[in-house]
Length: 142
Image (tube, rainbow, N blue to C red):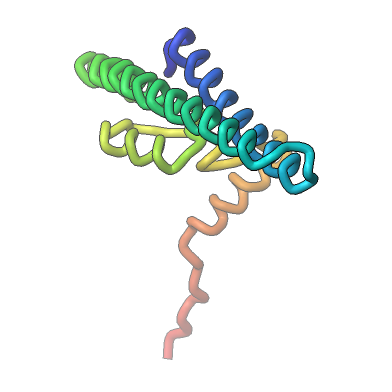
């Protein structure tokens, strides 16, 4: 669960970092094409590096706030003797954090890609068949 405000801020900062990386590549392309001189390249790289540092610091602060929110909600569920379910897990880092919080159940893109109903049914059936113990043939009495 994410707070919409913090979630939007995180998405904004993530896009800003991606944009900075794209800008950095375009800047190098322009330099190699002779469109800008080395002084301009260095100045722009320094500006981009400062933007990236600022965005990364903000992102760390946002992540810290989100971690507090997640911890509080999980603890509330535990205090109320509820089963806790984490949804939308996309990264190993998120999964590791949630394991540390002792969430009861988890789902998300990291664990399984979205499936159409027919594929889901096939996977469940296959898993069920694999989980059944193999039946051995009856022994003949000698």
